[in-house]
Length: 385
Ligand SMILES: Nc1nc2c(ncn2[C@@H]2O[C@H](COP(=O)(O)OP(=O)(O)OP(=O)(O)O)[C@@H](O)[C@H]2O)c(=O)[nH]1
Image 1 (cartoon, rainbow, N blue to C red):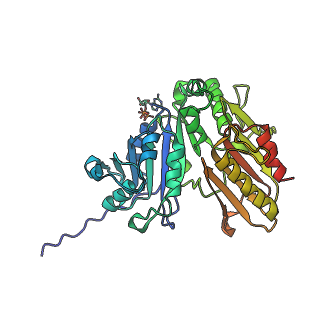
Image 2 (cartoon, protein in one colour):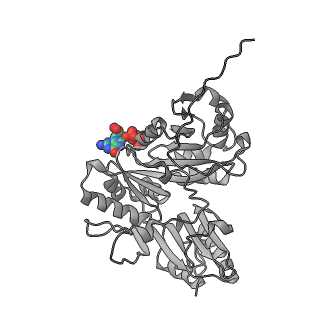
């Protein structure tokens, strides 16, 4: 029998700490961003860099939101097979485009091409990441390709440093109801890459960063050129399981156009707690250690706000729409909980003992969306009094 001796292949040097390998989950990161902001550039970099991970990159064939929402999520279309294109790369990554959307198609990809350490999913420049994120978040328990679940790791938004500010300013609702896509993308992001920083002045960069921060104070902003970013900032971030990292306390863009505050600053700055940019706003509320009754009221409050678009004090529906919520809070029993929400879906999960390190004793709730006015703040704060 013709038996070939297998060649020894040197083990790749691991340079990028990605998601912990002990988990059975294959983390999935959604990459969204404005048209031409640099999503493909970022992905091409990942596909050609020597990072030692098998990453499946699914590029740009995911249609717009309406298309995705209309699909039966767990049923691949019969002609999906013919419409797949693969490109296996030297660094072990796989680039593919699949015309079908949703979990079934990605599972099939995993079954046919082997399991991956991570999946990156590029959306089109006009996509709202919220519904896509909820699809993957919602289906986590059901997606079991190769006995490994797909777990939503986070949403990364690439913002164009040249046109981003103008786009955000223009992209406000024309009818007073809808929220522009660029703002939705920023609101729904867990990490933001402010890309093409080589093309603008530091002053302009600060202004754009400030606007981003006003829309989403909970997402760290990394400035990049051609998507050059350490993968640990965008992969393995567990944005849907860990408490919010909130750039808030650490990084507050200034209004003087010259200076970006950071943890290195030797002066103090109180984090602002409410912003409004063109109909979209964020609200941050500190919460003390909660009693069980307050916890129950908070849960009820979140349900009312997310599902009925109103607060307990107002019987009728308000112009209230939550795109993203996050939070961490502690009960007087010592148990710590994390709140994660995308659009109308949310979950409150208890953190295990080992994970509670670094969480402040009194927690914080961050809501991002539309109609988050002072009434909403007071309503939420009244639970904690
Ligand atoms: N100078 C400069 N050019 C960049 C940078 N990043 C990307 N580009 C260029 O910007 C153009 C658009 O980049 P893409 O990566 O195709 O953008 P995209 O977000 O994938 O575009 P769509 O898929 O059309 O939404 C390309 O010509 C890139 O080479 C950067 O940091 N600096």
